[in-house]
Image 1 (cartoon, helix red, strand yellow):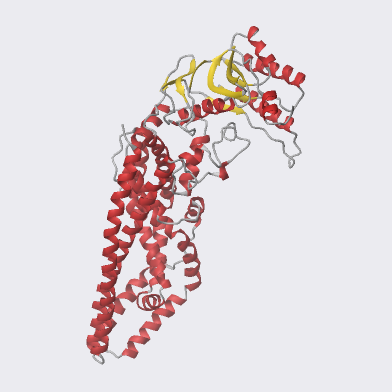
Image 2 (cartoon, rainbow, N blue to C red; image 1 turned 135 degrees about the horizontal axis):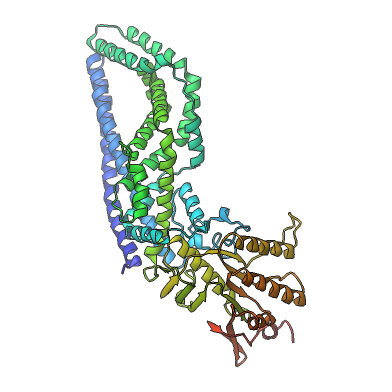
Length: 590
């Protein structure tokens, strides 16, 4: 069994040691770069007015300087990556200590009209999404949200295998996360896809070969200038001819650069992520299938994406005023890069969407694998096909404190309904959310918080948290009826596990009792399975007429003028209510 906290401490320590070493190398690299620059300046100063020495000093010095710059960039990249890895491991240690404040709560996914997500706090502050989410790309975050809310029950063993496989690849998951978080990407993937599919080429046919011709002539002119065969003025004239050629396309080039510069960081990030996916051996069938979508091409997707990232980075060099002017005058740099971009888009635009979807999938599944890794005591439900929907031992809510959490057993058959009664704060609503979350987690392939669990897959729908809407001119009661109508309609389409908490709260007691009874009868007639929590003890009488319905309760006891809860799920009807006691205890009434 893995020990996640120990793993995170060890990884943090190892990365801290490596970071210290890289920082020393960076200090040395900076010093060497300064010395190289001074050497170039000295060569030019002492070589003047000898043209050969000056040009030689510049060419050789610049080649050495570029090598040193690239080496320094590689060291900087290593430093940044190690810092991200340290942050990742510290974050996990913070989560183990109960601090999830640094995690994204996914507030944008809160949807009060969803069949269950709002009722069980799937999104928002202190939500399950916030607790489990470790995605590092926007597309991955959206994919994780879609997985949690999909309400599908297909291929659960296949999903379990994939999550179990990726949970064992902790170091790989952290490398993936560190790489993704090193680049701040703001452009939505959908915008990039649209740009690639709608792009219209502008580089004229003659301009596609002209950079090669101009570059060749420029090299010849440079050699002749070095040998003293031509004058500097002749070389300067040729240089301005090159700038003029570039100027004929400058408006279209600028428009392309504006678009290309926005997506540059995305491709820089994504080619590295695809490389991570390509170079790992997966055992799970689902992971292998997704991996093949980036490995089945003649050329690896990572290399193709890397090529585009390099082209975009090369295009970005036009921002360096000295390089931009020289390169456009001597080799038509902007036209050359524009043509290379157009060639890449024409060849690969249809493949990009699939590659991006694979990255989003692995980003989302990394979160699911991380959740499984962090909970080695959780178990994967045994998927069955019998008439028992759920039988679990010591089922608990994964976000409750393990030292205080009270776990419960439950067995509920197909077409069976539980009516749960209990005192205020006795644990009814928490239990409903525990069962609901177990169903959601089981359906997406996650291990659940239980000692054992057998589960026959079923979709979930609930009505636990209803509010009125002034904007829509909808009363609380009407909003609740609307949700109950959705449940009835859904039952005509498919089989659902229904979870209800104190329905028909927006009407009087007598009307509520009669309406609740009729609604439960309607659900039983529709052969539904589920749980309803209520304070209305009269609803419990329905069990005498409907054998499919059974009573369960959560108890509360008053001992020595103090209220005690055991939070245990029991057979029968609750006999002890506590509203009057609490009113007196808090001094609200005498």
